[in-house]
Image (cartoon, rainbow, N blue to C red; front, side, top):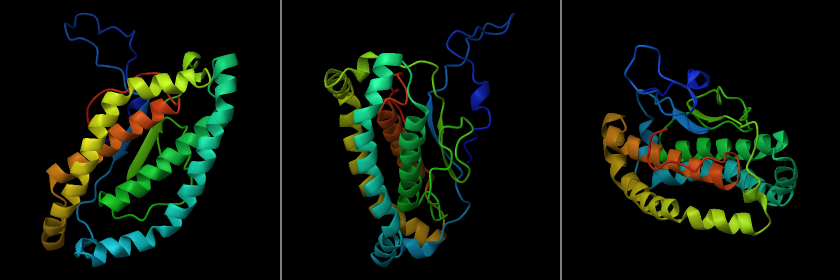
Length: 234
């Protein structure tokens, strides 16, 4: 299965009308934070060897974990600055998209590799996350920046607390999906080890969990003002 991001820019907006003579309603607008995958035809069976493969994967990902931990601190600190241009100008700064979006894209590449959705070792770097055509490679995070940003979420403390409250339903569901993802990893190793193929049901659940998670994160840090939809698809 290949998720194609090449048509993202052509997706109609909310105000677009259906073609004349057509009774079909226009397709729903594309959510501004999209995570897409190009799944490999087969997987390296070594990573599915019980215990050994899991420990080995954690070891090879240590450099990413270290860098992402440091970047995570920088991203948190950046929120103490980004609120000002959003509140006073109504625009999310370009450097904020590059930093925060790049961090989320990097995190999703590492998470996808850890879950076994791709065999390609994740690259280091942001890979131009602010471009609407997304990151190159098997895991692509695409952002579609809006011309203006809502100012109320940038009100110190008030906006942050309000977002946390309205995101509670998502956080509850994501917690359950996270538990399910851990259980899936305990089950999916067997078909991967013996067939070299990730079960479609497991792949869809894990990729859907990551999609849902990054949409919520993107909304929380202000990369989009559109409340994230419920669901595992883009």
